[in-house]
Amino acid sequence: MYRIVTKKVLNPSVTLMEVEAPRLAAAARCGQFLIVRAREQGERIPLTISDFDREKGTVTICTQTVGASTRIINAMEEGDCFTDCVGPLGRPSEFTEWDDARLEGERFLFIAGGLGAAPVYPQVKYLHSKGVPVDVIIGAKNAGLLIFAEQMKAVCDNLYLCTDDGSLGEKGLVTGVVDRLLGEGKKYTQAVAIGPMIMMKYATLGLKPSGIPLTVSLNTLMVDGTGMCGACRVSVGGKTRFACVDGPEFDAYEVDFDEAMRRQGLYRDLEMEADHKCKIGRDR
Image (cartoon, rainbow, N blue to C red):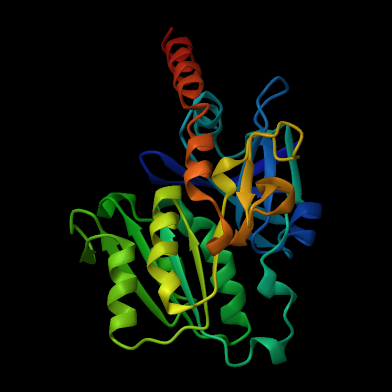
C-alpha cells in the first residue's frame, strides 16, 4: 500500500499529493510517469511525476479531475493508501543524459499551460541544480487556475505568468509571451512545452521559424501506460510511436498534432458518462 503523506488542493479541479513510495522515488527521473490505482478494482491512471524526494522516499503527483477515476483519487485524504503505485515508467527527459560539459552554454525556455506546470517543475529544478539558466512561462485561464508559481520562482531565472482574462500577470496566451520574449532579443538554445495539446501545437508553430529545438510531452494521450491498449498511438516523424513507451517526450516539430488531438477526443464521451455515474453514486 502507498500512503498519501500530504495533500493540497491547488485549485477546484487539481490536487497535489505526496505519496510514500521509496523504491519509485529512488529510481525516478525528470520526464517520467507512474501509474496509480486507488482501489483493488480501480482503473490504472498514468500520472507524470511532479517531484520526488529520494531521502524521504516520496513522489509527488498532481491529479486533475476529468472523469470518475480521477474524481475518486482527488477525494482521497492524507493517511489513505493507493492500492498500487507503479513506476517510474517512460523515458526520462533527454537532457538528464547530458553531462556537465554538454549542458554548459545551454539556456532553456519552458512553456507550461495549466496542469503542464506540474511536470515542468522537476525539470526546471534539475537544470537549476546544474547551474543551467532557465526561463519559465506559466499560463492558465485565470489566476485561480495557476499552479506551481511559487515553487517555480525559486528554481528559475525568470518567471512569466499570463492568464487569458488578465487576472494575474500578462493578459493573453503563453504563445504571446513567447513571441514577445523572442522579439525583445531573448536567446534560447532549447525549449520545452507541456500542457494542453492545442497549446503545444501553436507553441510549436510559433517557435519553428526560430530554429530553437523544442520538446513536447504527450502524456495526456496515455491510458494504460504500457503500450498494450494502443490508445496513445501518435505519428512522429511519419512513424507510429506510443507516448507511454517511446515517450512521453518527443521532438515537437515531428509530431502530428492534429492526429494526436483527434485521438485525445476518442474517449471523452465515455469519461463524461462514467464521471456522471460516479457523482450519482456518491450523492446517494
